[in-house]
Length: 71
Image (cartoon, rainbow, N blue to C red; front, side, top):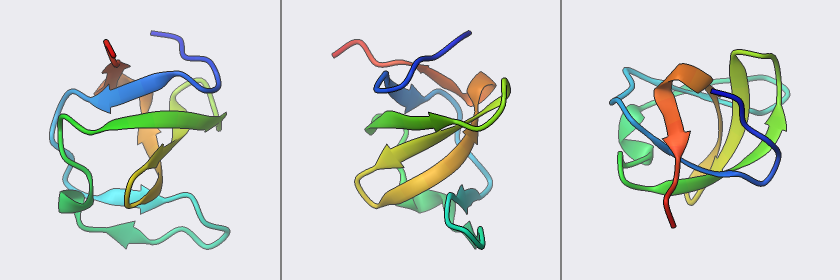
């Protein structure tokens, strides 16, 4: 699936960890983002990875673990 900047997305599978989108990325616990939480795409890092801003931080997430939010 292809995404554009400012698209609203949500997780479709639970993650084992989250990787922050900072200059020095860190691994964070997966419970910072709920499955039903809606985030916004901030940037497209590669064809497989996007930077998504959620309520509790901005994380790098594989596109195959995201879907368009219906809201």
